[in-house]
Length: 408
Image: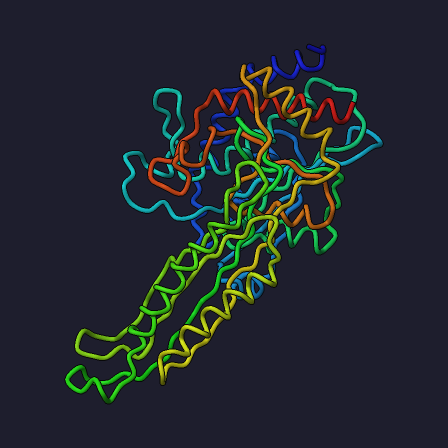
């Protein structure tokens, strides 16, 4: 192990209690999205970063733009530290997260530590990597590492709604142009590809009438029932479309929300469905959307008198493995294996992330950070989300060592 690796490891160990306190402070401030009032968390994060000597740029997204996207406030942060001439490596993590929901046995905003695990909403995904990336960078600065190039921290707040007002905002305005990106992930794998996602809102419009005279109405719910049957049957087709990316199996379609009707004694005149179609990296997004729309319109056409409206909510392209990320992936794997004592695989994930926005610009990317082997293991997006603190410590060292290798 090199001297710089020894020095950064030792600094991280010495300041680990401080790193845990930093993460707890981030968990204390809710970033539930919806409603998406995330600027207060960004300000708290900026205060914590500035308190340790890092310079923070606050990039506020205009209120009208944020509200049009269905949120309340978004402020994205950039920290830049230049060691010398050379490439820029960006580290991106998102602070926004789904609401905690029911079933918690620990306060989702307390950051309680029990048996070496820190509990809280976003403790694992991905406020943990606010801490991982911050303390990896600080270790390199404090140890006086003689490096070339620069490191940027991108802490953004629009992953749950697609990322266009998070990384998309920073990239589209030319506020950052990194040469390499590492984004929030899990410490037992290096992810290089992920699924895409199409979300549609489908409104079926019939004619409400008194339930005693059903023939005077047009039942939108009966039409919706036919549509649901057709949509779920389509999954049998999708299961035959296999991805060649390890960790990704096949596409899938899910209807996640249904609302409609006015009362029990009224024939439903309106039903709204919201569906999610996951796309494997091999699929074409335009072709997928056309296929889903055709399935919907063709099925609803079998219900006379029912009109249909289809609105796209989200279209997130898949992340395909970059042909020029080999040095980045090799460094992450090498150091993760050394620190975790087991092979760390390279894989894809059926999730979708805002990392794709960097990948679409040809930036070599890898997803790696603090966390367990799987999303399910961390309870991310479920009750009692948690992070094993030893994973946080080791992942921070992996990031510091990787940065030192790439900028040596």
